[in-house]
Length: 261
Image 1 (cartoon, rainbow, N blue to C red):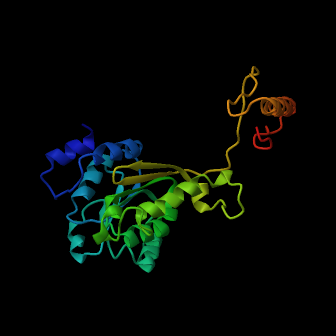
Image 2: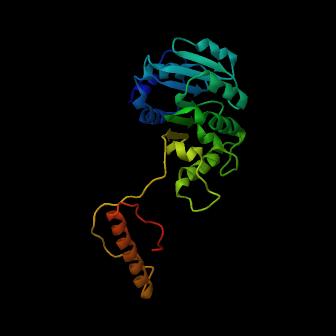
Image 3: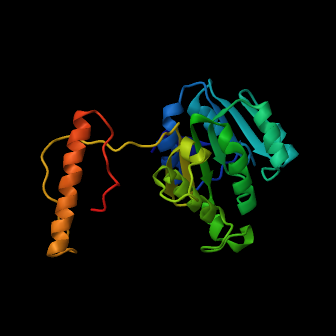
């Protein structure tokens, strides 16, 4: 049991609602921020219990912000916890929030869970997360619930939207003019899917470079090619192998995709 789950089970303060498998995920991605000067924004304040949980978990150096559409949530403010009142699907409000609060280390979307709310919040706030920060959107099972605008493989759900982000994560390897590197490609290091949760860890990214070490090789072989086809494949392999040895000696980049082997 980690500290978050322990806090939850021993909690006698403000009410918290969480699915039982969330605590392990939180701790896996958030533990490195404990005891540090961080900014955390949680969309969806409700009773304020989770804000108190984050405050306890991260320590007194953390600045915690909660966002909610309900003005009554202002009453949960306390030391190191501030509440922002507005709609997470209101782009103008979210742009104002970016002007009012510092860049975010951790963004947790536990708001209304509708498709529009999740997508708009991501599009407006992801850029305000620090280059080494974390985005977490939870309760994504609503992408399969019709009363939230969801449905299995239905266009416009947050899950279907996020599948396009998987493509952009790999855009450095594109061989098609229409598939281009964008700001997400340059800033997203990894995407982690769990039951009902998506975590995106940020990092400044650049185009990967394939590297090589060692000198011993064996000829390329594929059972799909027989006879002269195998011979051609081996010739191409040897040509590429020889070329890469020359490039390595000259300290130039290796060739990887120029030969159809």
